[in-house]
Image 1: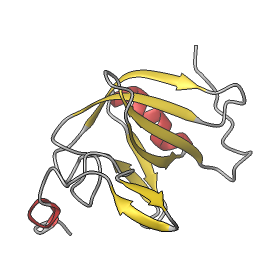
Image 2: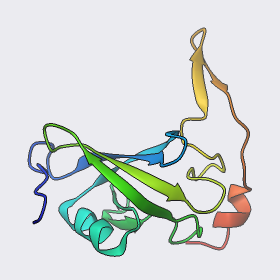
Image 3: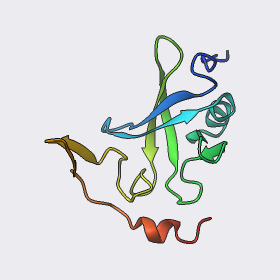
Image 4: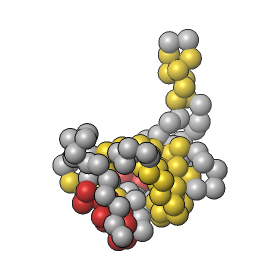
Length: 128
């Protein structure tokens, strides 16, 4: 049986939230296409669709910080998914933080609430 997600409702892409499978910490949010959905199911690693590059993007392919799928939750409208993942490597965010959600709105300003866990410049410096 194949799960048919509703990619048409949102113009071909749907949100995918990556969440740590042990702690439930939200690590990131990205978009998936029908092709990246199929690749995620096939490979067992979170694969997204990069809107800026207009191509499939296997999370961690360049950094080594892969996201191994442990469980997938699908919402009632079939247009959003949660990937419960094992985050390989120290973090999910390209800024060097564990989570992309490392800032909190406080008195109208963004305040960092966690420190980077890896040096993003070193990890991505040799990557094109």
